[in-house]
Picture 1 (cartoon, rainbow, N blue to C red):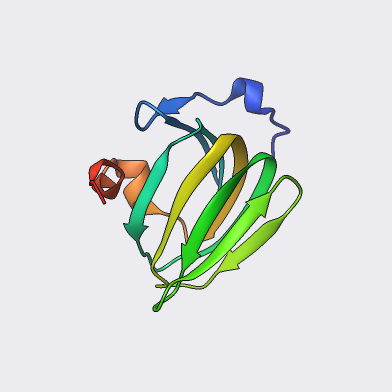
Picture 2: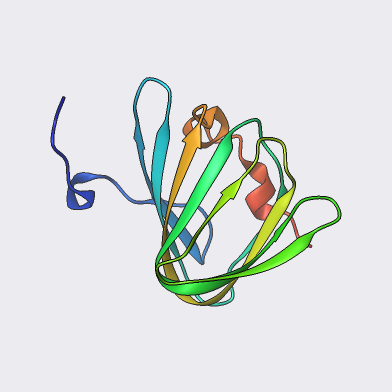
Length: 119
């Protein structure tokens, strides 16, 4: 076990408007995601259950089929079930914490190409 700080975790540039930092354990992954106003995370789904907690800023999320719209603001969180389609639009510069179980292997090996799709 090691105490860590986000200051010690490398920042990965995902797109022009999205950066992230990743920490993994044996069964879970935590990400600090830095999103600029106007960023869009295209519709996607994955086997992982996802918890998203907004540290600062706000975003609009669409979750499920049919999509249910949610507005998330600083201090709020949502649980996204496994395999649920979801997308996001960032309304202002935002910092969020995402927790995934199981670990998102596509984020680790760089096969998360949905970030570069247009919607």
